[in-house]
Amino acid sequence: MFAVGQRWYSEGEPELGLGLIQNIEQKYISVLYPLCGEIRTYNKQSSPLKRYKIDIGETLITEAGEELIVDDREELNGVIFYKVNNDIVPEMNLQSKIDLHGPQDRILVQNFDSNKFFNLRYQTYLEKRHYEGFKHKGLLGPKIRLIPHQMYVVNEVLNMSPPKAMLCDEVGLGKTIEACLVLHGLIQREMVASALIVVPESLTNQWFVELYKKFNLRFSLASLSGSATEFLESDFIIISTKTLDQTPQIMDRILKKHWDMLIIDESHQIRFQKQSVLSDALKHINNNSKSSLLLSATPEVQGEENFFHQLNFLDSNKFHSFDDFKKLNNKS
Image (cartoon, rainbow, N blue to C red; front, side, top):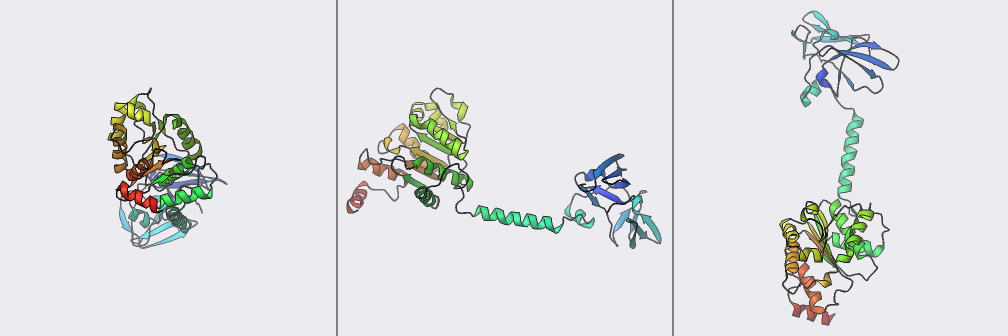
């Protein structure tokens, strides 16, 4: 493969110019780069070198700077001799300066990757395309045991357009896990790049731990004692209803930021039917978000009207009239 006098160049460092094989040992070769006066030693089996050849009809440049058209070429003991104008130019007499920046230059010097690399890239793109269309994206990866009813709920929400829903499973059936799976799935599908989770004060740490340990999602945790600038630079924030309601500077920063997803736990505790700083803020965020989830094991505990306004918060077009909602409920 290698022979003294051959010209090769380094794919990783083409600026070194054409190298000249000087010495060949059992495992190593020594290459002189006349352009910079350096000698490099490479392992024969893993060198970054590419053979330099000039085809018939192309132009070669000699060490003296003379440009000549190649009429023919022959190889003797691995070294190429170019026939030009009834003269012979051995490859060791070629100019060491080369320019291989463009794709056309690479083609002209036969700097091709082998078919196996093309096939590898092609298969990689096919696998990437298959993964991007994988309908269960987001369910794989979290450190949880998938339960059928949770998978059903998550799949239904992820297939919504837009994905806005209320999760009302009984206590202990995993509403938090379902919401985290939906969030994880939307992130994996590149549909969510920012998320705000609003929960009662007593549940902030639980949400933080669940997201970090089971889903490897890092959220910033807001608190009344912390500075507004400590966490608001984050795109993923957990904040309590108390902190959001009682800290105007935090509320202001939250409202100025765009949120792709809003999650509200224990949503029945918020009186959406009454105008307040908190309810108005949450409505504003919801109206501008791509996805919203309300979680409550007891959505009707504050009365049927409160339940209606939670649904109205999610979809005011579908749940626009409390009277119609009552008639629908009475029929069912």
